[in-house]
Image (cartoon, rainbow, N blue to C red):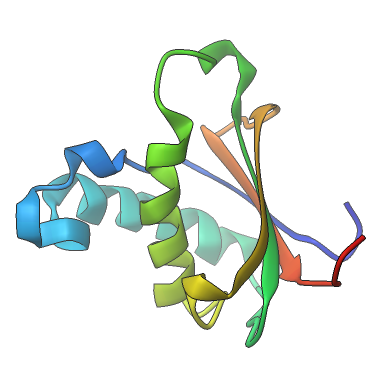
Amino acid sequence: MTDWFVLDIPRPPSVNRFIGKLGNKSSCVVKWRARADQHLRAAGKYPRIIGPYEIVVTFPLFRFGVFDAENCIKALSDWLQSREIIKNDRHAARMELNWGAAPEGCRVCVRPWRGAA
């Protein structure tokens, strides 16, 4: 995946685990963000995408059917925005969700959107 920023992080918590109005301040999200930050620091340099972007999220194939993958996207998108990898999660022009190789629990690949393929 050339020109993609690829990061392996732990699986984000499901939006179903957020505590009411606490949202991203729910304890499960706070703990996950700290773990994800460790992986981001280890990656070193990372992009800062200002406009539309495309994202590919992969969860481990052996976990297929065990959890509702799309419920994990909200915490992931909010984290990417809070770390300024993307400017705003509403600028997602293309999103793809897969089951496959994700050694840490979630592989996220992001790059500036290249328009309709």
